Amino acid sequence: MRETEEVIEKYRKAGKILSEVRAEAVKKVVEGASLLSVADFAENLIREKGGEPAFPVNISRNDEAAHSTPSFNDTAVFGKDMVKLDIGVHIDGYIADTAVTVDLSDNPELVKAAEKALADAIEFIHAGVNTSDIGGVIEDAIASFGYKPIINLTGHGLERYIQHAPPAIPNKRMPHGIVLEDGDIIAIEPFATNGAGRIHDAGNAEIYHLISDKPVRHPSARTLLQKIENYKTLPFAKRWLGDHIDFAMVQLVKARIIQPYPILKEVKGGLISQAEHTIMVMQDGCEVITK
Ligand code: CO
Image 1 (cartoon, rainbow, N blue to C red):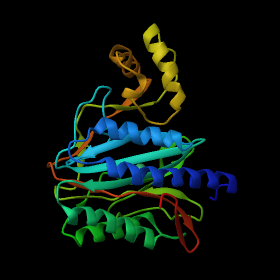
Image 2: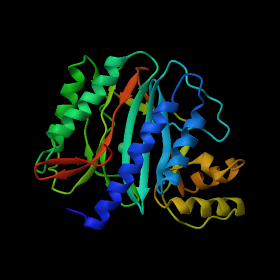
Image 3: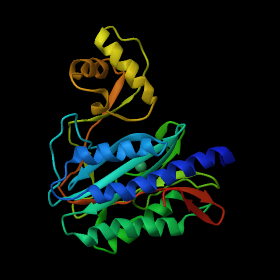
Image 4: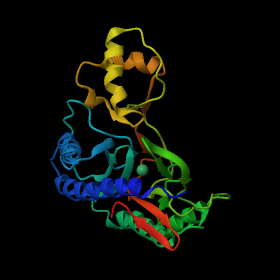
């Protein structure tokens, strides 16, 4: 269903800010630079340009696919890594989502595989296509480079204040899918790997989201929850909440008020590349919001 013109303009504004931020952030990813400096830089630039981060800047390296973001006092620096920057901006809850691979590991073909899969999917999409066939286009493009797609990660719909809404956009051909309609706003995000093609939870979370708004007893947890409520249902970084919050965070997780997004890693330790754009489906093609 098509959004109002006013809402579409908010998506476009989020997308424009995001593509500018992506271009600047990519330049900061160099050997020896700290991950925290890149995350801070990108998130601050989003705010300077009049947007809000829709989720913490994900900086995933090598066999990490997603959900990795620096901690409060993180000292990690880039080495000869395959780096994925996944960045989101929202305007009034309307989200644009993009990702790019910055390769410091000298595996250019793996990067091209994800980029080609995204380009082919964008070329293929118009109102009336089935999400299963989009998955097929992505899978074929990645296979043509001799790599595998990550099959248990998908692209997704975007709704106001909801980063992962239906429909899922698979990264392989599926037995069933759904038909895209004019005006649908979705993120396409192929991942390519030289590993097995699947990811698993690797513990350790720095990103969380609010899942229920029930009362909490402990005063420090209550204070923390008030801060968290500013992010509504969007993912937030633990580092955004300051230092010395471990106890309160544990209380909120135990009470099932917030939920972690564990870091996702390739099951066989394969290198992973990623490319992502947010698009709006049109009768005769699609508009790339994050170009
Ligand atoms: Co996404």
